[in-house]
Image 1 (cartoon, rainbow, N blue to C red):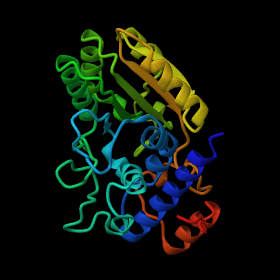
Image 2 (cartoon, one colour; image 1 turned 180 degrees about the horizontal axis):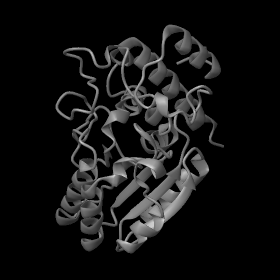
Image 3 (cartoon, rainbow, N blue to C red; image 1 turned 135 degrees about the horizontal axis):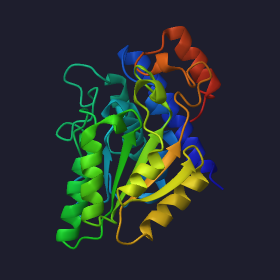
Image 4 (cartoon, helix red, strand yellow; image 1 turned 60 degrees about the vertical axis):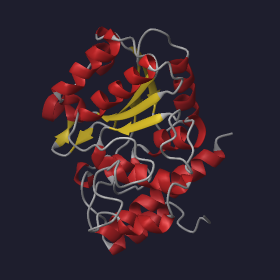
Length: 273
């Protein structure tokens, strides 16, 4: 039932590995963990037009955890916002694909992000603008669990509930690891679901690698009135590559040629485009 989406997510993982090997830098772990979420949004749910990236009535997406840019770039390329060949220029000087998303340089990027925590506040602004302008578009954001230690996240959480931003749906990529180690050792965020509930959000817990659960949660969010929705997606850092899965060392390290070959083989790298 979800085979097409699964194939796209797999292509995106292959893109991510190849991009990072080519650039010799970047963040594989948190990019791979979010592939199903981003695939579901860009290839099933969001009302967008790659030929008109600035379409006023489009749905918006904000990658608050901006270091996960490879997953966004891969989705945009696969969706037709720019040629896939551009993926080979990740993090290169003068490339349209920098280490963090740049709305002025990359077609399809709705918000420049990278300073952790700020993306959710920006998504709030977009959702509030939609309300004030009486627009029907929806705003989606993807937040990291390590990022959720930032105070600005909780200021934004208060604002979204206060203004009843039911056109805002946020995914928490809850892979349990950040650059310095497990969340509970660096700064425990649990119980994260109860915290967002206490801030006035509708909260849904899902398996972040299940398209069925992701799409069902999005539908539930769209039918929730009077409050924003937080979808806490339990994911696996480095998902799809055995030696990267649940390994904090792969938060921000590019694979070698040998590691790239092994990863692509595991992902069935002979897939046709």
